[in-house]
Amino acid sequence: MTNSLKKTLLIGTALTVLFLAAGLAMPKWLLFLSTMALSHGLVSLGIVLLMRIGVVSFGQGFVFAVGGYASAMAANHLGITDAFLMVLIGGGAAVLCALPFAPLLSRYRGIFFAMLTLAISMVLYGILVKTEALGGSDGFNVSRPTLFGQSIASEQSNWLLYSVAVLVVGVLATLARIYVDSVRGLVSLAIRENELRVEYLGASVSQAVALNYLLASFMGGVGGALTLMSLGHIEPNFAYWTTSGEFVFVAILAGHHSMLAVFVGSFVVEVVRSFSNLYFPNTWQLAMGLFLLVVIRFLPLGLGSLWTNRRKKKTTGQEGGSA
Image (cartoon, rainbow, N blue to C red; front, side, top):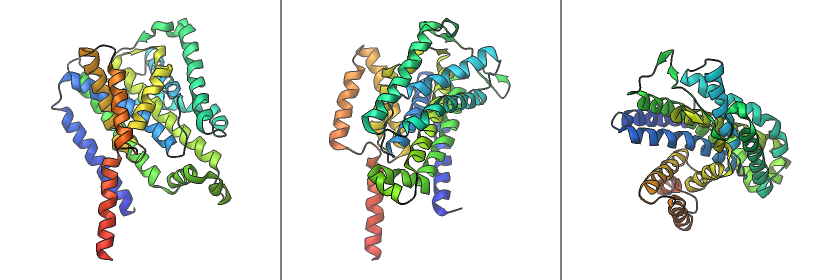
């Protein structure tokens, strides 16, 4: 095991434990808000993986909805109510549904990739709205999940669901960090800069794009399952274009340099949305739009550049001093 891998695992474990401990001191409303931020941030993390390879998906609502509906149907019709099993079902179903589209999408770049993913998501939205067996436009409710065969008491549900989200997100975010630091992950950055040169070196750009899309799909499906368990309700708006737009918003806000920044950005969005709807109804989009403009102006590489650039400067300074 390399030092870099050990450091990544140590940081991931430490942050997971820190977030779990912080949940003990949070009120119920903040636990719910944080759970939503974690689940939505996981979907945006998938978009960040795509951004690293030079494409952006405007249709992550597709896998978000597939994950939510799959886990909801497993709970209501198959009796699978364990939280971790529902998460796996949501992620697995999203990958299976995204698999046929991966070879097609891997051929396109730029606005064509974005619009194709958006079209796929909106087709699913139209199907869900018209399908009465899935609740139509109103969706349907899902009972509270269980944990290792034990029912969750209502007074403990917020903290336990938050803890499940922290554990799942902690594992997946750590694995994502390991992936982006690997050879295949670094090839993604090379493709973003010059994919023709990567092809000349013998790597398959199409396979790399397809792989990143499937990884993003798994994270989107897991995020959908976590959101479903928190809300206890599923509806076609999970696949609507505005939902996908929010995930892209968070990804741009965070940048593609830091995994942690994605969840910080997601939490900021959830807080602004919650308090804007409370005190200034229907204005949270305006507030977030202004905030994004400020970030783009002063932090063009995203919130993650606040600490990644500082770390790089510190490393460069140490190397210069030793030289």
